[in-house]
Image (tube, rainbow, N blue to C red; front, side, top):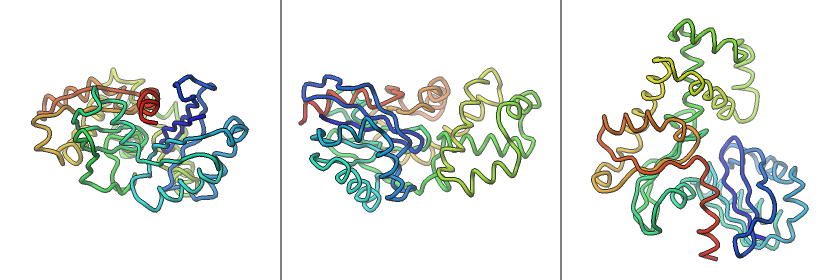
Length: 286
């Protein structure tokens, strides 16, 4: 059994296939497994809570894990150790989520492209056809993650409290969520995964895209992401497209294309969930 995992901070999707790529069970979903945020104990408990995974743990020969928070060595090695303990007969590979986005979005294995992730968090890399290159080390949701779910959630809450929302949008926002200050602070400062909590508000934008306020908010985040991340690869952008993966990117396609035309870069492919495209890649390269 081969496990292919695509993990964000909010959720992790697990695919189990055989060596021919045939699905062995329905997709398993667990909570997010971000080793830059969660403790070793929490990572272990989250995986072990899945009966489907633990019941088949001895049968697993390979684990290919791609996740948020796996871009630096210490968190990556910690998660690798957890996976090796739970799946003792498996060869375990742990890589950052950007590499999964690369394999899912490029048209050919050797295609060069700038590849962006916009989900709960955000990131951007350049793939030269063989290797991945990053010019910014992510400092996580507190300081970075422009145009991500948690970025937009924070902007929405701020605009609500600072009275920057149009009245009809503010009423709708207040009706959909518990916006009591004590409740928000409790979730931000006393609960795990505050980045995922913030990202839960982003859905509101796509339910209210008839509002000029919402469209402008989405575009503003994309411009900031482009300035800070995409244009780290200014020279490469002259010859390669920019691909996008993640739910925020998928549902912001019109706004991304508009900002790309405005700022002068070429938009390529959009993939909401990279995991499905990873199966043929790994079967071919076992």
